[in-house]
Amino acid sequence: MENKDCNWPGDDILMREYHDNEWGVPLHDDKKLFEFMVLDAFQAGLSWKTILHKRENFRRAFDNFDLKKIALYDEPKILELMQDASIIRNQAKIRATVINARLFMDVQKEFGSFDKYIWQFTGGKTIMNHPKENSQIPAKSAESDAMSKDLIKRGFKFVGSTICYAFMQAAGMVNDHLEGCQHK
Image (cartoon, rainbow, N blue to C red):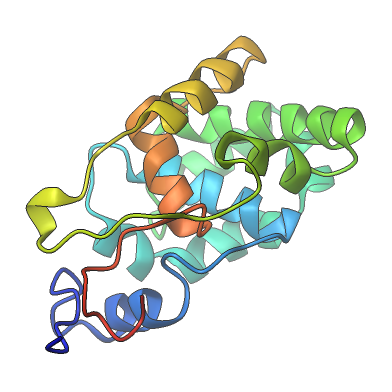
């Protein structure tokens, strides 16, 4: 079979590095899982390239995605983040990050880790899709629907099925590399 890399990263260096080293790679580290939850929530309505190019700014602004610190953010801290032009200054998404940090820790207490909880939606395994072209990559799935429904029931924000599917791709719960991509 011919080697046909995914074309969505284009020539952008950060997009290519993300594609080659993170997208579709199984992730089991709670801190990184939370980072992707936050980044995917901020992506809603925007391009992944925009978020990826602000990733380091998000890490700095959100205390390197330290759950315990974020869970304690108060109104002055939220207002400070609203003034930070280096990130996406969406008040609803910033407030959702604080709420989600608290709920993320609740899930960790209940399941032992967020990783153990979240991977149940794919039976603990990566779903290997075999798209031949970008148009065959879905925006959501039955698994992302179930994940979204459960997260919403728990009070999480910005966790619709499409956002959950993007999270599943980022966390390697789903592998949507094109058939023939060397990174599949």
